[in-house]
Length: 355
DNA sequence: AATTCGTGGCG
DNA sequence: TCGCCAAGAAT
Image (cartoon, rainbow, N blue to C red; front, side, top):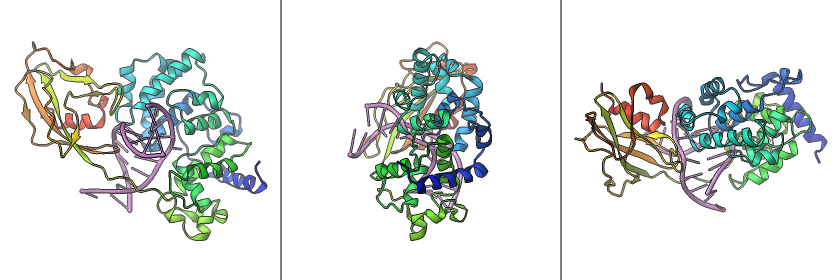
């Protein structure tokens, strides 16, 4: 059970949130929520998926575009796969988009288009893990559930001066966070802890002077807040290389292919090319996707993914009309927007397109 | 349990 | 230039 100290802490945080909540497009602020306005579970779900490992600034335009184009989960469930992947292009972690569509179709087909107001049921849905299930349950339905994201981990590590490095510390931090979760206003509480982490208890230069939990903060007392949370060191990123083929037909059509559903950039549009292998290995010898006079660009496309750097050699060709590709398909100019490409492929396009 | 999955901004 | 970081999930 929760003790009086915990209730006081949550109460002080909610008081702070009432005056300092960030205004976000998907959020029902504390005043409106108190007046009885309920969040749209679809908006909460969509925003939470987009916000996974992604900044608020990056998400905003995508959230606006998705909700304008697909106002309800039923609309999204009825969308074409390629349209959703293209709309997600640039946001990264493309498995989220594939699972987003799967989830929308499960909700539409098996739940009557209504998100289940149940933590365990939410957890069964594609793309919804422990954090997102708790976030939807609390924020959309005011079910007491504990969110543990990067913000909450940092806040809890400092509040309790926890020096166990992440990710090993997660169960400990979850325990601390759960003890603070109130029965009243659990949705506002969840958003309040995350706002506190995002605006006050920041990774660098935390604004402790403005923190409603300063007097309770063990790391502040110990002077260790700047070095928390501890993290286990990460591995260095290796560099890989490969070749991509950018073919333009005389009518302006580009030769593109949809990448396999699984793996890096899965389900996204891209330029045909080789595998990407470690820089210490020779360039793989994949046949070009179509017979042509290929020339190699002087500049390679460089891009960094989560766990490796990539140097992509670009080869271009101009093709006549009557030649069939062995891989991919031609996309006519009126059907092609570089904004539909993941960032690496868009970089390659920017280097290879005619000037 | 450890890896695999993007991207852009910032110091 | 480079590592860190952002409302994690799936395998």
